[in-house]
Image 1: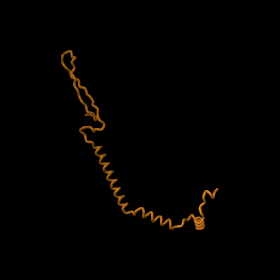
Image 2: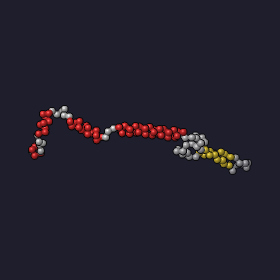
Image 3: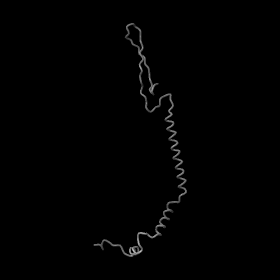
Image 4: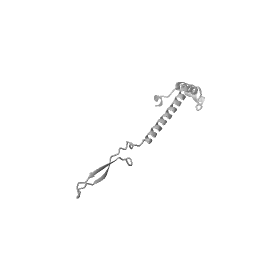
Length: 117
């Protein structure tokens, strides 16, 4: 085997000799090589290393996800947090609206289309 190719040697006898003796000629035939199969007789160290790296990456992702799950378990439920934010915002006065404008907006009815025309 040379350069990942399998070689077959064939010998043929020549029947056209003047002295009656036969001579053999060596012919090398190169067979097709599958690109997916590793060369026979050698170990596929690259494929093994690649698989080990994939396993290490997956183990690292598992560890990160487990840490994230632990962090999520410590958090409060979202509805409780939303309720606290709503109570805080609702209890505070808007700094961009003055008290005079706010009281005016509360007592004045909304205009309808009939009143505009």
